[in-house]
Length: 311
Image (cartoon, rainbow, N blue to C red):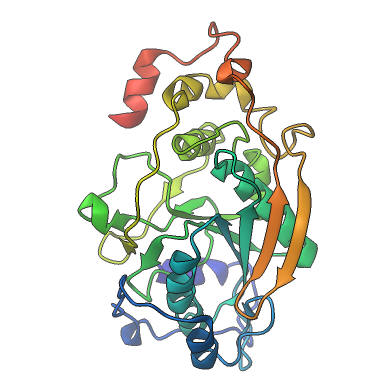
């Protein structure tokens, strides 16, 4: 349950001056995926949000300082709908937070995993954060009790999405929205930088979590509910599953600690009223994905692959 995140934090931190939450007053929110907010209306409804999309409670100290990292390109309407939901919810939860929108420059295939890694590194330029929440732009949390805080493992906040009939897609699914502290994110070497196009980078991430000895935790489905803002689905990457078979071989080098894979250029940094936008050139995908799949002798077995999806 989400309230255990605060109870566990009390074991290692002073409770004096810390924020308290009355979970009896939190619950389902009226989430409308068809609303059409404007940036002006969101600003008017959240007057205390500072430039760059930052806020913290004035009457207490939040248990964690949280960076919300949103990989992004060409989804401005989705972004406004999400901000319209996130800002008031995070304030109700009394969280010290800053929202980062990491926009991929250019028209090449989208690389969600690398944008997450870039967001992690760029967020830490704004000071230390205890918790990183990696948030897809099209998912809206439905329950204010679903705290955007980290535990000691990897907390998959999107436990039940409406388009998946409010069920987890499969047992090891770690996509959508996931929270992890910075120490664990470094421990697993972040996301893979190698998945160009939609799909499987979150499976690779989940496998790293398990192989590192971390748990994948979730709030109960009735609390971890999300609505997905409707949009045209992207085509799945042609070689996603084939790439995933070789995740274990690439894992130690493919991620945060890869100087070549993490080569990127910050094109623009915008301190907007509701978020900090980081526009980045992350390079181009290779001409052939075979560059990542030269040697299949060390791929995981088909039995491991099937057990991952159907344990």
